[in-house]
Length: 474
Ligand SMILES: [Zn+2]
Image 1 (spheres, rainbow, N blue to C red):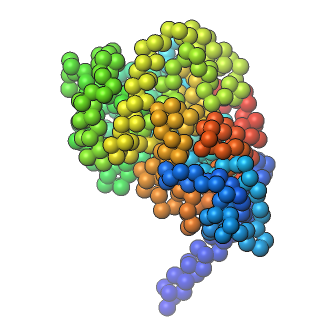
Image 2 (image 1 turned 180 degrees about the vertical axis):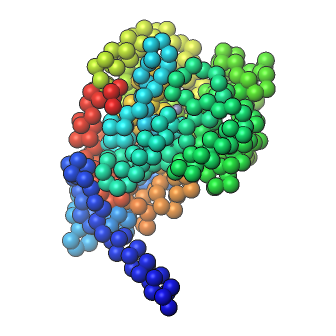
């Protein structure tokens, strides 16, 4: 009896706490524009995340953070007491689910490549850019990332829901001060377990990790029903698929499978790059590899943003120049100017990468997307989320497919598709509302007005404005 009573109170508590409004700190509340129990967005153009063509004149209703109705405006009407938002001339898409995000930005350490945590600007920028769920893909300050995740969940910080990835699992190789180094498979397994015990929920192998390291981490992660991805090199894509990796990063840009002088468990960056430059875009060898990976149910993460050539393109693609600290902007600008008309090889490889990602998708592979805000500093969170969607259409995807890759596919990878990823009754009201018809012009993604997370609408532009000049500092 005593037990039953306890059990009942537990259920009651769960029910009441679910219907209570979310609590937000004043610093977060400042950016909230819509926070009423029931909201109806009427007569809007809807891209629902499934890849199906956009539909005109749709109405979406959500209540207490869940979508309750979605359909033609003639049949779905706003319930009494709902706050009505006129969606005429606007587009509604699901909140983005982006899988290669970081909480850090490129900050050189003398002549060494290095990155530094951006705990103020980056979580905000992701939300402003429409990302309501992200997976970090490698961390440099896991304790900070875990704290950010908790602060966001507690309403003390603006940002997306987070799947926090443990520190990089890498063998000694590149001289990057902030990267985590392990010594062999036992150490790799211990590292994975140490961070999983502290709240990290996914793992990332890095360039010099060996097959044995990878197998050890995959074994430990899968015991916990967690996933492992990798920006790999010493291990080929085929070997990684055989080992049971769940995902690989950067499309085929880190693929060493076609390096004819490849030594097992070793990376030769130059040979890898040359082999990809030489490989025909329609090579049957690539088709065979793609089919092998798909057969192993491996996901592939597109991070086109970090490979975008310089020549004739924006300095900070997506329009994020204003977010940069003036000193950081100077460095980015110098590099970008120096690269003008000198990056033909990168441009030709980028073109192939666009095609290979399309082939992966068309052959039935799970193509997911992220933005990787590192590189030479041209990838700035939030703005980059917009840019990734634009670049996917440059690869030949329709706007609807590009949105699917950045919403439903990410949700499927995270195993959260019952909850997020499409606009459907019963799912979380994670939504992005923008001005203009996205199916007609992909650049309308930059006209994002409101980002709903769990039914609460945040003012995108106001958040973008709040971090101007911060990226590169905090
Ligand atoms: Zn990365």
